Image (tube, rainbow, N blue to C red):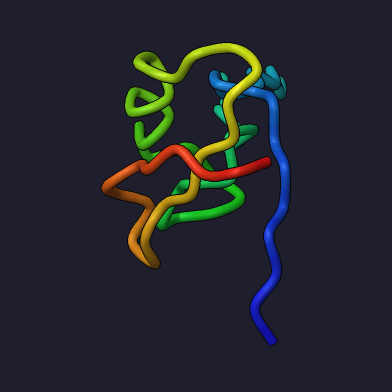
Length: 66
C-alpha cells in the first residue's frame, strides 16, 4: 500500500556513540535508511509551505497539492 508521509526535516540527525558519529536520515529519502546517504541535499531547493513528492529512488522532486 502506498502512502504519503509528510516530513519537514531536511538534514540528518547526528548521534555520537563513544567511537564515531553516526548520521541518521531525517528527510525520509535515504536509500540506506535509517542511515543518511546524502539524498537530503535535494531538499535544499524546496520552498517552505510547499509539499513535494519524490520517485521511488528519492529523486525528481515535484511540487504537489498539499
